[in-house]
Image (cartoon, helix red, strand yellow):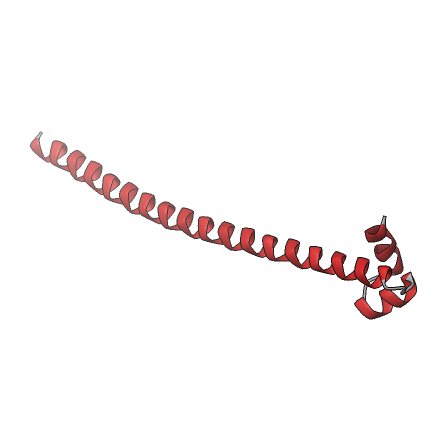
Length: 87
């Protein structure tokens, strides 16, 4: 009778250890995902800034007398994209 109770208690303790270990792993993965999310947010902000800079350059070139085709050549973006920026 005691052996059965001991076996049950041992099984419960082993499951508790396993659950604790899995919980720690999940927490680590959650932290890693949070860090990656923050990195992606930073990269997104950097891309937004670069896009704004490019838009400002296109507008500046256009206001200084360059045509859309010239601006497209200089910036490396398509003439349609240049026209879209200038709208």
